[in-house]
Length: 408
Ligand SMILES: Cc1cc2nc3c(=O)[nH]c(=O)nc-3n(C[C@H](O)[C@H](O)[C@H](O)COP(=O)(O)O)c2cc1C
Ligand code: SF4
Ligand code: SF4
View 1 (cartoon, rainbow, N blue to C red):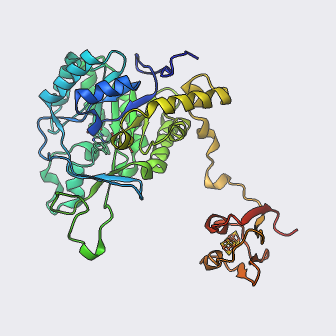
View 2 (spheres, helix red, strand yellow):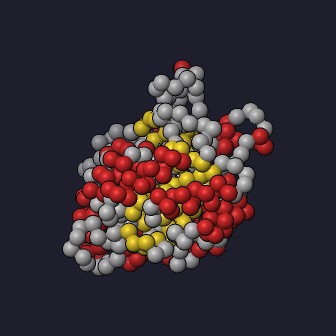
């Protein structure tokens, strides 16, 4: 392995990233000083904040909430770049960043395809090394479709509304392919549950890579005693939130897994969603990702954590005998079995009376009639225990363990 801590190369089309870590498009890729810092911290690539062509019909100063306990980030109000600012940002970033790959993320919000072609040409001229076409933003037409009273057909379709429709995605990619040789990434929405099918179409239409996932649209927690007050500060109304952060990871892993199974081993997949540790990144790669996009974690902690991640990743790879990211990729694809292929063997829970404090928490478990509390400790009737292991997870004293074989 190369001695440079940050060197662990992956490729998107013909473009090499020095490592698979990418700052995903969002509030940490809006300004050139952020991109310079990301480069200094060793990131493989950064995807600039979404640029709209023309200026979007919904654009606000940002209003965010980071709900630490829920590990959930949410927002509705967000500011996107106009075309001129996006182009300038790419131009300046290319001057400042020698190694980090600069990726332009953009959308066009009209029915014709000319604006997509125009944006591709102009971003290429500005120096973008890869183009990411945004078929994922849930916060424009999709938000309005889901939350507003007005009929759907009055609005131009973009982002997550568009990304569920193979025909639109295919046409945009084919048209874009006509005007640029740069690698194209299709960032596709998980909304609608069609991400794997649409990814296949996108790759067939000329995308070098697909990226999954963006934010999911949902209703963030409210104060039920004061339900008219939104959870956001400096904002008047309750809204659907664009959700991200660690809570999304299991869904994001599934999406990447499904895409990899659908598209086979060749295409590059950028796994994004809820990555907050080196271990999360490895899980994502094991589920089929070639590279890893990170947004929320960079909002909360900046870019400097990459050094620690790279050290622990290299250490992990050495111990496991992995030479390259590709050696880790897809390892879970064969491991994850369908419900029909499951093996479940007999076993029961047992209490260690020495550790049990008789707190009674396990006796409260609603689906279990096997546990009673005696004077000394909790006791489990092996004839009634079904081996589910909920009690083991509930016990605060770690007094319960599972043992194989139901009846000894
Ligand atoms: C505040 C905010 C703004 C975002 N803006 C964009 C954007 O402009 N373009 C885009 O493709 N994705 C955008 N995203 C989505 C992220 O790039 C990423 O796909 C998503 O947040 C999931 O990853 P995470 O859990 O690491 O944040 C944004 C996310 C957040 C939280
Ligand atoms: S393993 Fe499940 S069924 Fe058995 S005692 Fe614990 S909670 Fe009850
Ligand atoms: S939860 Fe644990 S400590 Fe509490 S009664 Fe059950 S076994 Fe004992």
